[in-house]
Length: 105
Image (cartoon, one colour):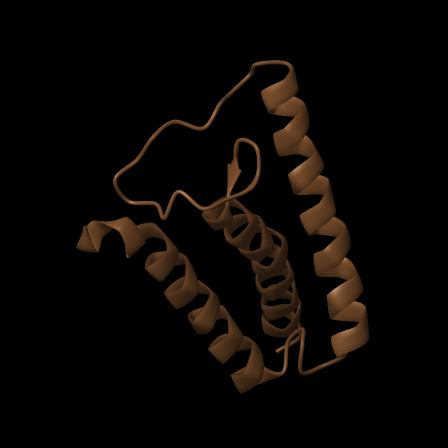
């Protein structure tokens, strides 16, 4: 039963680490939160639509896991998937901006 929140806990910890990096070096949210919200929102919507298309064409499907909460927001897409897709849209922005600053010196 305790493992039921394992995946969502790991996702939240990863997001908190990304937010800490972002805050520390003012990379994305703390540089321009409006632009960051738009970029993350567009990426998140793209990934959600890609997941839905993948399920429609039976490229993949969600399976039962003891590590998830089993809270379904949309049929086939659990709560953890939405959080993961938000992380997936946010992480490249952090990496890209960090790389750009590192290259500039």
